[in-house]
Image (cartoon, rainbow, N blue to C red; front, side, top):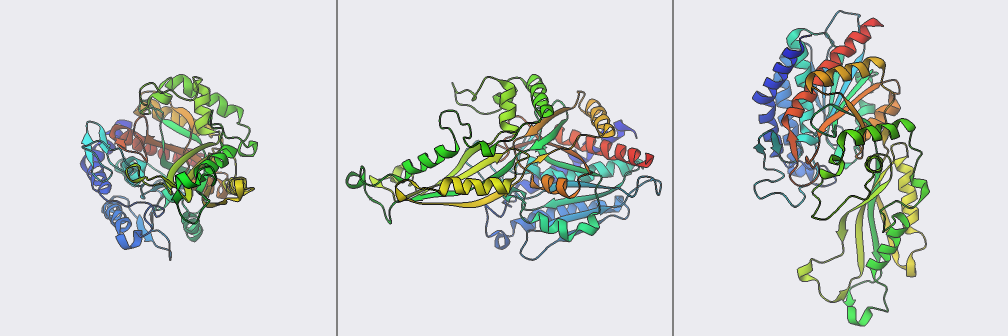
Length: 480
């Protein structure tokens, strides 16, 4: 394998075709079903599928024997399924399967975009492509195919590869288990799973994700009245729904420190992950928190960098992501409101059951409501996390060499605070598989928030790494 030719091929394909495709993809407001309940009627999801399908089909001719199908189960979001046959000496490593995963649905718009940017307005500034979904992770199908095309360009052997691009990851991948079961015989038993939906600590080296937190959450509503009443008449008599809600949240989160209170939501952190957190803190330094747009004078929850890494990867943490029952400031009169509602997002440790955490959370918040208030917690998400199995020696060596060659720096390992339900699902179904989980969401890329961007050079390099590792997987499988 000529690695320089791999680099040249993939870089050229990104510049000529992939970046323009991503520009058009960003224009499509194909929000995940949780954020667009009328996604079928709006048709944006189908537009995104058609864009990716059309480009992918144009490349199948260079991947002899490859096939593509848009699978549509009833009442489910679509899934793009691409099957690329093995290339190499028959019988030598060709009976194994590599699965490459990504998603095409997006987070909602969010406020706070710069004046010249927007979620559906693609803008290229230097090495960055701004807009929603390019990095998270519309590039995955293009990067995966670019890697395989680069291998075919040289006739480099590789195992059979299956590319799966789902359409409800940002809603918790609730459709994906049905597709995995539906396609089980066609997928086979993967030996290697590649996921391009994760993050990177910097843009200077390859980052492998060693764990992902799970997530649970939903809508917490506190109601005290059937309708709003004059605050001068009712305050001091009718308990405020907002105060009761604060009290309930204090059962879950320490309001002074932000630490989650119930011990049931913690796990023992493996010693290896603690050590990896320490090494990541040494590599990144203050970049661990400098990447966030703090207001002047603001500081992180602790000065201990290793603890910050563990907080965002292995400890439960709460975010209130939405509020209901409150009028806008310019229309808020002197009224004691009948109810207050908040949307809660609770990240849970990788090895804690998301379903069990959700049940616990509902019980914790609804039991013994203060003053007899009407308290309901409507659970929306309960996805479990994932803790990577130990890397096989061949994969660890392949990753190290690929990072040195394409990035010019050693590979780094760190857990991620986000969730990719597909990983936990595949980890349970295929316990013998090896996992290569990486991505392009680095400092300031701001996935889910305003001014999200894709760092184009990192997208190229990650695609090169995938090509390299898929080729080395074949070499290892051929020894068996």
